[in-house]
Image (cartoon, rainbow, N blue to C red; front, top):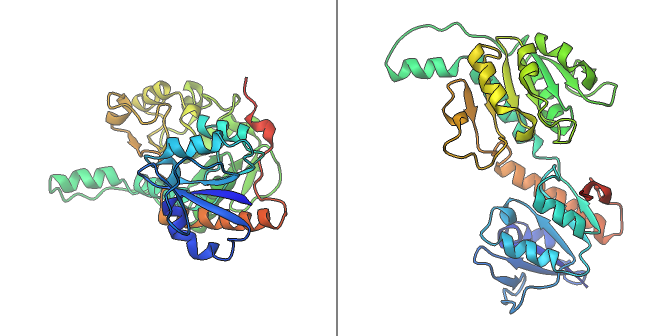
Length: 331
């Protein structure tokens, strides 16, 4: 019988959906006190269990028991399948699990929440939220000329699940989206698709430039001094991808020089961002702590992805969002 490892909060949330699987699965949990239990009987386990499959989500990785969760997986001699709640795989912990697991699957449903982050930042920029808040702080009644989302031109670099989720929303509000990806052809939410080698030519015409490609040797540091110099001086720069995509010193220098106009970052090169970082205090930068996807909806959709793949696993069907093992080869 296979043993499934879940965080205790995850099990409590999805337990009704797991009933009836007792004959096929032994389910164990780990809680925030670093203790393992039989999921159904709540019996404490004296030693960490050997597990065959696990669901790694925010409950597990943001828990005080993350070390115990990871150790149980990495020390299990016959670990078969890991379902991640994340889309990316470059985190060192995920790479270690990917190297251990015979099968590794990802999740792309967090794109819905991340798309709302992009719209939030863009609407605040277009409607000059900082200016209005500054006036309110000093009780100053003064009209501010603002812009509309309608007619705005967006360049979304990395037009995958996140890019498309943003593109659909922007298009619905009257914006015009150019998606940038290697694969040609139409894509939902984009008026057109441009290839990556057209990046520098596309930058000047965009009112909003959003980065959401994965971190690869090709994309590392792509947003550099030349990139920012090519942007429209009235444009907004957004990063929902990875901090390593951006030369942060070049971004601050460019903002000081007036091109682009503003930036919002959900990811930074070093996370957590050190208190001494100048990014915190730059008056043209908004920082959020890599939490654009952290919503109840994202958690619920991640659960659904896991449960759907669990059914495929138990029925010996092909798992969705399966990552080739070669992606975890390092060095």
